[in-house]
Image (cartoon, rainbow, N blue to C red):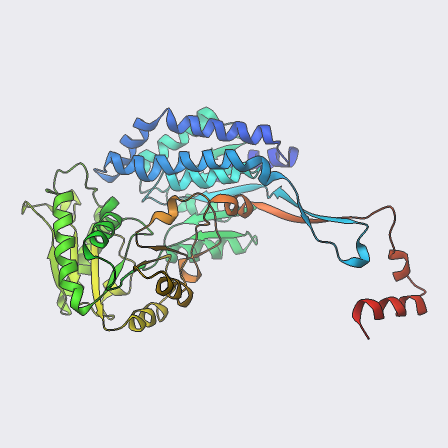
Length: 466
């Protein structure tokens, strides 16, 4: 079945029922939640096979848990979200009333990435269904087993008039992005995001772009090194760094760099005493991405950087295993490719600074990141850093946890994305906010009609002022 043939039943179904009831939306969310909970092992196995080895715990923690949590959150708030919101009416029209009606936009297209191939397809779909839309999902061709499983599970639980999945490569993705959707959510690279935006522009399709970028960690001297290192390591090495909100580089004072290095090495050795066959450590998704990461290391080393490879057992790991050990990169400079491109792997550059202002200037002089992580015991100083920097989201004294807070909006800014979802913001993203004014039986609008005269002049003086 072609992409267009999958799209049309969804379009026609929406035209026939443009405002699904609360009960219908709740039933869709219940079915989606049950689908996830009853197929956990299949999801874990498919993703691991696609990666050539991915921690089952990481899949449960970062894909299954947040998706189920989000659906539960949506269900508990949906009835309230669907209610029209009253708005203030100005004095001349006081007898009438104003409200905002949240209306489904129609058919939502979701283009999901390979790094979290289940969660980043299904959680946006839950918000789109909650808003009353039909959904068409295009999973990544880089994770074909997960894509096939997702298509089968969705087809078993949902009518093709509610939600469908289409699979395939670049040709399918190109055709998908050219369809006249009512909204598209894309998660992936900035480069591909530009292509999606260009294709969608022919139909003036609204977009939510969840991209990436270089998310910095700033470690202030007031924060203890050991807990900071443990949190940075967990956020960076999980999924072998293949996470859009993973720390991309660290800014640390010159006097504390070596202490941070020591702690990062120690905590990484404890977490991953071996690399080659460790079920807790995830492989790089493909040879192409593995080679790209190796090239980043080579470029940095040729330009004077020093690499600390954390391979506790000293194992020989063949390239075809796609297992890149956690690596710290020291003495990096802005002209190195590793400091210009999103890394998306287990490489952590470290840069030193002399003052906090130096760090803030460095962050602000580069494209706005998807996330910013700041460690500091002084809350006033931390709030000042938040005010002086712009990022999609931020976490104080930890890494990546804002993504798991269902009530917080999630999204980028500028090159790291546009638009938001999660929480009410997710429901709002996939809704049309229709402004509605209800005129009262008793009103004074007749005075505005011609022929106009002194009565209107007096009214204007009262409303505008002398």
